[in-house]
Image (tube, rainbow, N blue to C red):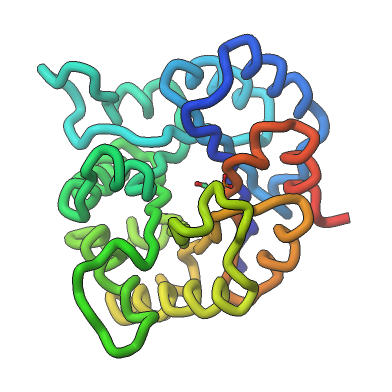
Amino acid sequence: MRTPFIVGNWKMNLTLSEVNDFLKQLTDKLPDIKKVECAIAASPIFLESLTNYCKNSPLKASAENCFYKDKGAYTGEVSPYALSDMGVDYVMLGHSERRKYFNESNKSINKKVKAVLNNHMIPIICCDETMTKQKHDDHMDWVVNPVSEALKGVSVSDAKKIVIGYEPSWAIGTGKSASVNETQEACCLIRKTIDELYNDDVANQVRILYGGSVNDKNAQELMQQKDVDGVLAGTASLKPKEFLKIINYIK
Ligand code: 13P
């Protein structure tokens, strides 16, 4: 059984006082972690506040990116070793905004995936149909490449822990989410890819999330699909009331 997983991705938003105010509003309102796991992905400047809060809460802390080296002369980069030491649980990798604005490649994402796992955190690997240059007759074949590239050299035991986000870039921040059928089709293809790369035991354990204009109206139906284990919410995670509605979808 895969525990549903809901991640709020704050991106480059909020200030420290807004973060603290947001977290205060979540207190005692989070779902039972055995039923639904929740995380917030935040900028490194807020991770100390977030991880401190998470010590006394079922909420999990995620970074939005990191470098693939633990330490050294890499000005401006964020160390996975330091993130782990701070108590960060997850690191989002390969978000389409990172690929678009910061030239993230499948190769560098693969190095980051290994660095995150080596530091005992879990990568949330994001992919969508724009992330492969391979052309296929079948329009849904696109996703095989970014997933298999990201997981190159990752062991079976590590692969079981990872989370994959299907985030069509055309749905991000546009207010137009993928349909329920499109989402299920893509998440099913991702699971099949994991099965082919590893085996059905791994494929059945990996959690696959949908992201792109998720809100408190569409989240529940998307999450009810067989291969959709949760959602990644951007804009809707910036308002505590809306985020609380999404994460408390089980009455
Ligand atoms: P929006 O929910 O704003 O579309 O952003 C989605 C996203 O990028 C989650 O990682």
